[in-house]
Length: 242
Image (cartoon, rainbow, N blue to C red):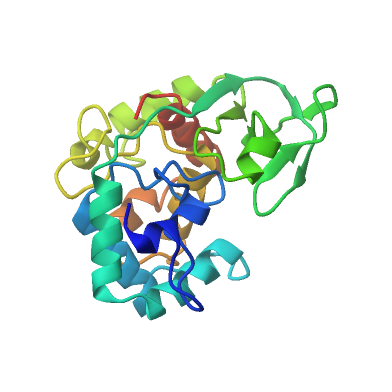
């Protein structure tokens, strides 16, 4: 593990492994890095640095930290972390549950946590993604797993949209991300990723907040997708093995 991943470089560069975890599974508040193409990771850092990759919610701390960190990190530090994470094998950490009722939640450090195991409320048109064990996740345990509660029927809707494009609403995801959605060359895999993360990225691309080199083709892909579409695609992709 490179020093920049394990310990960072004070005072400007936070350890990559602190937020994204030591072997790169990330969490609902950020990105999974394990197994992403090396060149793709380098390009994303460049996009954060140039301002091409922003957030529709500017006050989100994860994006603000990445922007600041990208300006301070050296090319060598970016290259070593990208090489490290790209060689790691992603693993399934998310269980998708279709339901009409989801746990009541509160915001805990830019992600949601369940109030308890009993209180439920209508899920509506939302994804509720929570850690199975809050203490383990807050302790930076890379083996933490999550449950993503999604509306009933969303996985099937997402599968149809991903495989057919939904009557010209978008294009088939496999065209660029591979037939199994696990990536194709420099294009990242999207199977098994956090549904919260997927929705945020599609929304940001649709609304012009993420416009880096690798993201430009996605602007037109996401332009016609409504909230139900975003949720359905994210629910389906999260249900797959990475």
